[in-house]
Image (cartoon, rainbow, N blue to C red; front, side, top):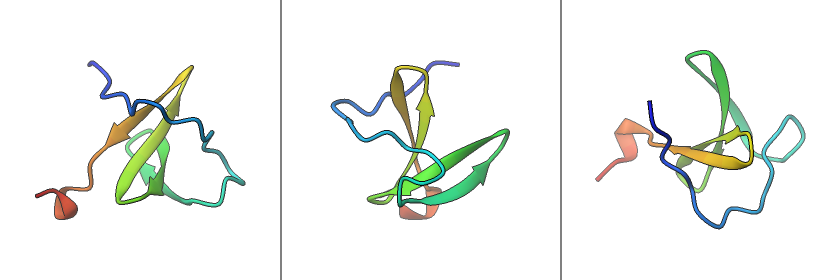
Length: 54
């Protein structure tokens, strides 16, 4: 599976980053500006919330 990378995202998500943590399959995503972000090594994967997709 390929990653949809959120470009130019300097913020590091984690337990105390200030964004809401959401369980997503086998990992934790962080709700950030209507997107689910997953810290993945040296980049951030961008996941969509189906109800919010246009």
